[in-house]
Length: 241
Image 1 (spheres, one colour):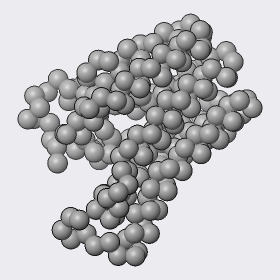
Image 2 (cartoon, one colour; image 1 turned 90 degrees about the vertical axis):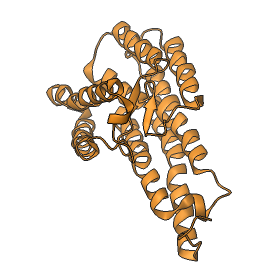
Image 3 (cartoon, one colour; image 1 turned 180 degrees about the vertical axis):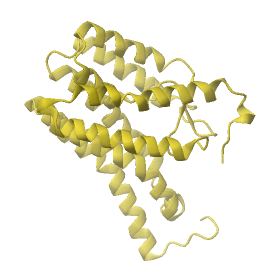
């Protein structure tokens, strides 16, 4: 056990609580799928939003509690990867297949998502030691939201999905929002604003404010631009803890 971390009863409860929080993303993803099958798009996105929030905070909580030291027999990173593959890949893939009118050649294109992201999750360098993702980091739930909200032709949407699927294999380093230290405060702040905008859009799904959806693209543009700039910079100039 690491120095300074004692497995007190309270810390054990907290550690199991963090694992339970991580695992809760799986049933939330199942509820998102069921909502999509029913045609309740807004509810499906609410459950997907829950899984994103959980994924955004569980790692920080795990490090604060010292989960690795308190519960060394449970691999929280492996649990997180299992849940993430389901919620970030399989859930949005199912959404794009079962909600009509979004994706041309829906099944084969969604299958390409799943195969590409399976490769992405399996890479030993999927997350670098200086806290970046390698290749497009399978934000398919975000992609699914914009493909639905922007109302592009299904053939265009299919091309976008294929492009991102190919991006999984391109070893560009992408920002890990909660851990990449360069501009981390700005990235998290903009991410919170972006999340609020998207939740507002989902809350008004019956009369979707298209201008708000388009405006919310500021964050994906910022994210990809920052990732590309940091990828092109010499590694020793990119701050890392």
